[in-house]
Each structure stands twice: as structure tokens, then as C-alpha cells.
Image (cartoon, rainbow, N blue to C red; front, side):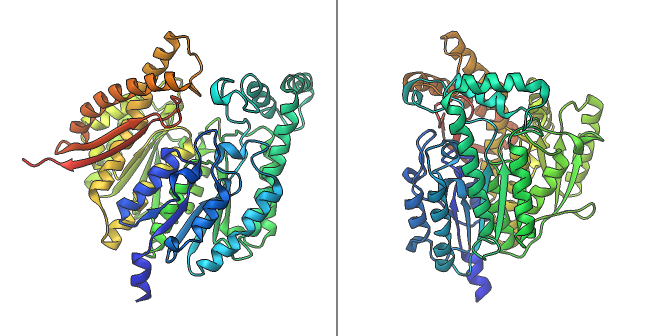
Length: 507
């Protein structure tokens, strides 16, 4: 009876913000596995530069609609500051606000004594959110050009090397009052993350991950990462605390973990790279080689890295893969598919100077029929984001099959969206949107005023629909688009939102 109750339970999710990757995709993972993922009402999540409402979200967590949740996955950035962007703003919350909001998690635990609670936070990235000083962003504390000075300073060594000192002083002066505000925000976030670590040995949180948001091996974050690692070790609960690169994918991987955990499944994941040195590749926006990051992500999904008898084969295509290596990579992929192994593909070649390699490889596997047989596909943003997305999709599908609640159509929706978004949007449509903006004299695409955003959204909708119509017969030729809506959710060209439902075509 207890097993049946667990099997039928739902997941409550407090997302990082209201973007598609942080809200829509985790909810879709639940659909694939046949498990509802509930999120707070959208107005509580805020929007881009406007923060969410942490205290009302805490009340939502403890509300009657969430009684009986089998798992709770929550973003500390949303609970403390009102989201990821707000976490980079000095006046979004004080440390005292954060302390008392995190203490409120004790009530969440008391309200859900048997739920598995996983929390994820971010270690502040090296630059605040970058926006031009226009429209409602005009008063943003680090609007351009201030953002540039802070970003350059934060990427210097800490303390600056002798040859960096003159540049460091100049950047501090150019940033003006925003410089001290930025450092204060970093110090506040570090203190909040230290407090968050204490929730694990206290039994409030079962699993915690702190993701280093967009930062390489050098910069102001290095001492923060080290200090948090030391705090985790000293907590006595280091085995349940992870500190690693990434941010946007963390909600997805922890939802995937919850889906696997509810049926007692530990996914066995084997990793294959497209080059012999693939595991040593390092994303410029991450502080560890991809092999280390992937190992952490597999564990965060509730899985285990193996060499033999995998449940999932994770194929990782890294930048600068030659034609000969691509041929061998595809041959091995075909062999796994022929042996009925579940293959997830993470293509990281978008980190090359252009999307040409990614686009060509996507076209190849679509043309060859490999794409439609994949368990998962992702190719966007950072290495951790990409791998985390592909792994989470594969784990959700595997969990659904094992519990008998798998939704094959929801799975196809997810994969179709990934090819349309990660490949068609970024490789084909986004460059056209940016070129059209440049032609109008709008050279900054990170924040568009409403009238300009409306024009870009209309163009994006038209162009991406064309791509969708060409993509679907290559991916799922026996399906049609029953519904699709395409938007630019944050009035910028960095990402698009695609809501789609496919349906089988009746002969």
C-alpha cells in the first residue's frame, strides 16, 4: 500500500525562474514519466528583471494543494531572492531575509515529513545580468557599460596578478558605486549558500547541489567555491552535497532523480565521447573538465557511471570532432541502437565559433533516421546545461517505462522541441533575428523594448514554423503538429519558447 501511494504521488517544483528551461522542461519530464510536476502560479515566479515573490511561494509550498507530494525540488535562488536574475542584484534581499526564508524550510519539512526534498542554489556568476540602459532596464544597477567593467574585473585573478593590478584599479574606478554593490551581493550570496549547506545535516533537505553559474577556472568565484567545498566537508553530510558547474539544468536533473528514486531505480550510464580526449574538454564558462561535470550530473540524476551493461548510453560530441571521428561516432551509435540500447546524444559543438558543425551533424542524423530512435537529444548553452538536459530526458523516459506510466507522445514532444530549439532556432533562425535587428540599428539583443520585441517575435514565429514543418517529417514522419505556439519569453533573442503537441497521423 505504501509503495502504491508513493507511485501515485506528484513532485512539487519551485523553479529557478520562469524561463522554458527552468519551468516548462521539468514539467514535461514529469509528463514523459507519467508523474505530475506542480509549480507555483506563474505570477509568483516573476519575469526577467522583475523578481518573484519568495514569501508567497513558501506559503504555496506549505499549502493544501501540495499535501502528499512524494518529492519537492526547490530553487534557493527563487526562495531567497525571487529568481536567478534577482540573485545577482544587491537590493533584492538581505542576508537576514535569506536566513529567515531558509529557516522556513523547516516548516516545509514538518508539513512534508516523508517527502524527498532536493534543493539547488547557484554560486553567483562572474557578471551580473547584462542589459542596456533602456526602457524598464534603465535603472538596473549594472546596465551597460557598467556590466562590462564588472565582468572584466571579476574574471581577473583574485587577488589580481602584478600585471593585472593597473587594469583592476581602472575597472574599479569605471564601475563606480556599482563595484562595491556587486561585491556586497557576492558576499551575501556566499553567506546564504553557507546557510543552505546547514539544512542538509539538520535533516531539512535530503539532497543539495550548488551550481557555479557561468564561470571558468579563474576569477572571484574560486575562493567562494573552495570555501563552500570546505563547509560541505565539515558539515558531516558531504555525500549529499554537490558543488559543480551549471545552473539552468539543475531543476531538470533533480526532477529526473526524483522520478528514478520513486521506483527504486539507479540508472546505469555509460559515456562515449566523439574524440579520444573528449573527457578533458573544458567549456570556457565552467571551472572543471567535461568528464568531471558529467560524472556529477549522472549522480545528480540518481544514476551511476558504468562501463558495461548500461541502461543509457550517453554519447557526447565535443568541439573539433573531425569527419573521420564523426563517422566512427555514428557507426558506434548505430550499433548501440541496433542492439536496442537507449542512446542519449549531447552535442557540445555549439561552442565552436559557428553553429555549422552542430547543424551539419543534426542534419546527418535526421537524414539517416538515427534521430528518431534517440532516447534524448540536447545541444544548447553550456556543457552542463546540454548534458543535464539529455540525461534528464533519458532518465524520465526510463523511469516511465519501468513504472508502466510512460507517455511516448510526451517523449516525442520533448525531443521534437529540442531539435527545433537547440538546432533550428540557434543555428538558423536566431542569426536571422539578430541580423534583422542589426539592420534596424538595434545592436544589443539582450533586452528589447516592447515594440521591437513584438516585431522580432513575429519574425521568429514565422521562421521557426517553417523549420518545424521541414523538421517533423525527418524526425517523426507519421505525426503531425496538433498545436504549437512560439514566443520570445524574455523579450530577447537568446532563447525562444515553444509549446507544442504532436499527434499521430491517421492514414
